[in-house]
Length: 319
Image 1: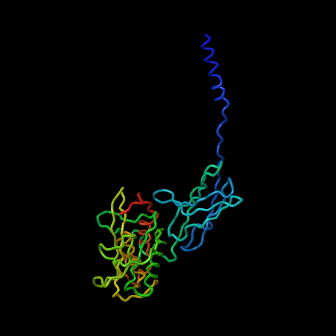
Image 2 (image 1 turned 135 degrees about the horizontal axis):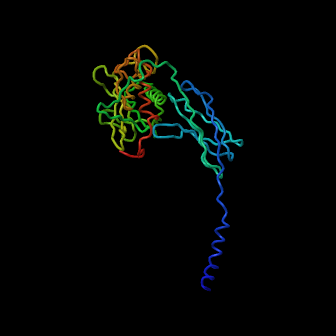
Image 3 (image 1 turned 60 degrees about the vertical axis):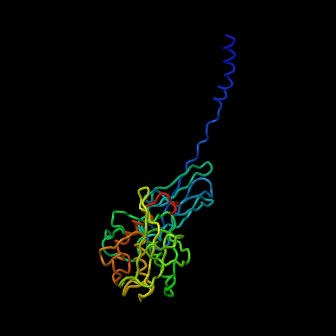
């Protein structure tokens, strides 16, 4: 009996300590509001998303867009002393985009986010033709595209090019960025002449002029890809331009074909697209006075190879 009493007495301080333990402090909930300055805009217009996030001043907030692989952050900001924030919405990217604002946990404040806000960015022209008029570059059922969640780098071999050729190539990439949501990063010049099996291995895309292409072909674009994790990922692309052709420079909406029009079309092939059936589509097999601008099929096609299609796994893989 004495041993039992001693054992019980020894246990009492431990039990008492458990009973006196302070309860865990609950995090304070966060309320986030968000309003678009305009829900429908023309591409290139300025539009913002603004609102408030409760909790401490100066807390981080981020703007996310919904893509096929989930929510992806576009930009970040911090709240003011009153909890207010303002961020630029993605009005440089054509299409309909579901956006949300997220305030990550900060101090005692739990994370919080808004529901989806839809921003529609329209082209500055009326796209012609059918939105289904497009096809993939591969004819064997593959759907190759670049990973849209990393910058697509490129270099230019300006040997044999005209004076404004670099400006026009950069203009073509800018137009494609508007249609796809992709990020293209210029990495300078290269001595590599783009051709089948020849490309600058330090970048994703090699652009340049060649002495001649067959017949009346002014440009040729394409690329190589690999299949992994259920995806067909573009690895290296080339755009070869025929220096013997005499075309108008720049971009226009009518008249004879221009170098800018050829560059946009061929870069469409580099991104993984084939030819459209209708002559009003930029991706039609011939450059004419009818397809200077992207048609409805082109915009569907560029969306299919763009950011909206979602990230490809193993973005850091090297080939």
